Image (cartoon, rainbow, N blue to C red; front, side):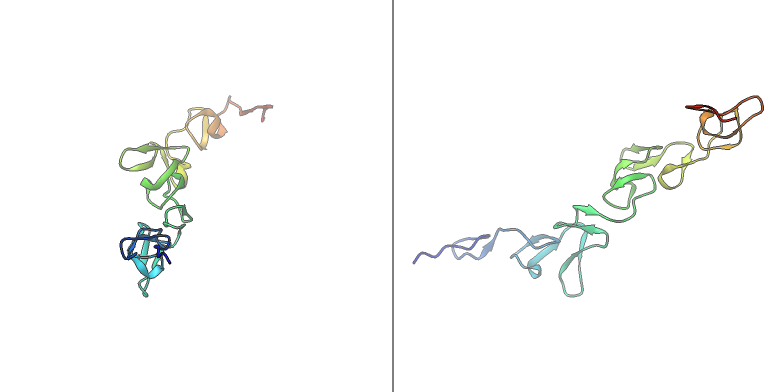
Length: 151
C-alpha cells in the first residue's frame, strides 16, 4: 500500500495545507470555515469566529460582487466610496486619489442636479448650461424639437 497526501495537503507528514480556503478567508490552515487565519478584505469574523462577507459584498472572496449603494458620483461601483467607482456618472470625472467627483456646477445623486447659470435664452430655470436645457424660453425665442417647433 502506498500512502499519498490528499488533494490540497503537502509535506512529509501531509500536515501542510496548500489548497483553496473556505469562502471569505484570505489565508487558512485547512479547507473548513473554522480554519481561516485571516478574513478576506470585505469580510469579518462573526461571533463564532467564522469569516463572513460584510453586508452587500458577495462571492468567494467577498469582492466579486457589490450590491449596495454607490457613492453619489458613481454610475457603477464595487463599494460605497467615491474611490470604489467603476464608472463615473455622466456629469462626473475621475480625480486621482479621490475617485469620481461631480463636475463644476453639478451636484446631487449621480450628479444630475445642475446649479450653474442658464443660457440667456432660458426663462424660469434650466436643467443644464445649454439653450436646449431651458424649462421655458424668453420672449422672441421658441423650443425646437427634432420634429419641429413646440410652439
